[in-house]
Length: 340
Image (cartoon, rainbow, N blue to C red; front, side, top):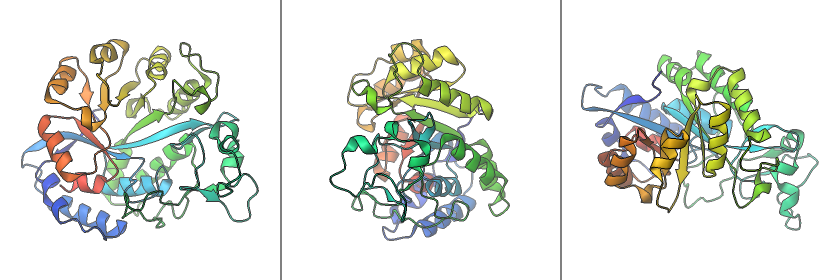
C-alpha cells in the first residue's frame, strides 16, 4: 500500500496566510478540517507526505498521546516520533536521553528522581538508567519554548484526555488502532488513522553510546533494534513503518534483520552520500531543510530515494520545498502544511 496521500496544492495554499497566532489548537484543527472538506481534489493534486513531527509539537506537548491525537484529527499521512530504551528493556516514545524539567515533572505524590531538583545529576534522569515503572512517575505537559511554540497547549483531547506520560511504542500503536475504530471520530479521520504511517527515529548517537545503553557495537544488531522490530512484527505493521536515524549504523543493522522495513537516512549540515544510502538499503533521504537543493533532489530521485526534509514550520519554506519537488514535509505544524 502506498502510504502517501494525494494532497491538493491549492488546499495547501488556502488558509496559512490567515492563520491566527492566538487560535487554540482545537480551533486550528477544526478550521483545517473545514478547509479540507470544502476543497476540490481535482485541482492540481500532488503526492505529498505530511508528517506530524513528534505528533503535532506546535499544538500539543511533544511525543505524547494528545499530540498524536491532534495530528490524527488533522489528517496527517505519517506520525513522526522518537524512541529510547529503558533500563528494563522497554521501547518508549521520547526524544531526549534525559528527562528534562523544561518538558516534564514528577507526578504529584510520586516517588523517584525529580526533574525539578536542580541538584539531581543528569545520570539519575537518563531513560537508559530508569525502569518503565519509574518512567510512569513523570508527566510531560510543559512547553519548553513558548516563544517558538506559542500555540502549544496541554489541552486534554477526546480520546487521550490528559495522558501526558511517556508512552511505550506498543501503547502508541494501540492508541492509533483504537482511534481508527472510535465512532466519535469522522469516517475520514478513522480511514486516515487506519492507514497512517509511522516514521520512527532510533535515538542512537555515535559519539554517545550511553544514550541508549544497550551495548551496541555498531556492527551487530543491538537489543534496542531487535525489540523495535519485535513490536512492529507483533502488530503486523511492517508495511506502515519507516525507521530513521542520524546514526546510520542503526539503519544498516535493521536492514540485515528485516530487509523489508523502509529506512530513512537523517542528515544535517553535511554533504550526503546518497549513493551509499541507497546501496545500503535506505529508501528515503531526510535532510535538514537547509541542505535541500534541486540538484540533490534530482540525484536522490534518480537513485530511487524519496526526499522528506525536516523540520519545516514556516509557510513560505513549505511552499519553496514543494516547488523544488520534495516528497513530503516533517513539521511541528501539520495544520499549516495541510491548510496551505
